[in-house]
Length: 122
Image (cartoon, rainbow, N blue to C red; front, side, top):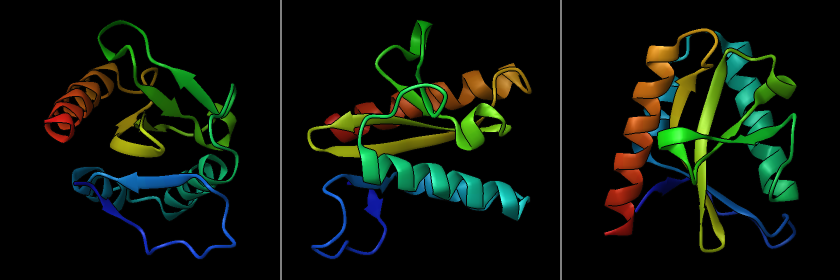
C-alpha cells in the first residue's frame, strides 16, 4: 500500500492524496526547493478540489492512458507528478520531468507509474 502523509484532521477537505514510496523518493530528489514547494501546492489543490482541470492537471495519452499529471505552477514547472484515482483516493505514482524538457525521462516515469499501479492493484 502506498505511504501517506500524516492523517488529515476531520476539518480537512474530503479528498485523500497518497504518495507511492518511490514517488516520494523522486520528489525528495528534486534539488530545487521551490519546485518541490510548487509540487506540494499542486497536491494541496488536488486534496482541496478533487479532480482538477487544465491548466492544473491533464490526462496522459498513449501508453499512459488512464493516468493524469499534475501541472504545478499552472504548467510552468519542469516537473509532473503522475497520478491516478483509485477508489476515493488519489495516488501519486511517479514524479516525471515535463515531456518538453526531457521526453525520455517522462516516458520512463510513465512506465514506472504503470508498473507501480499494477503492483497496487494486485
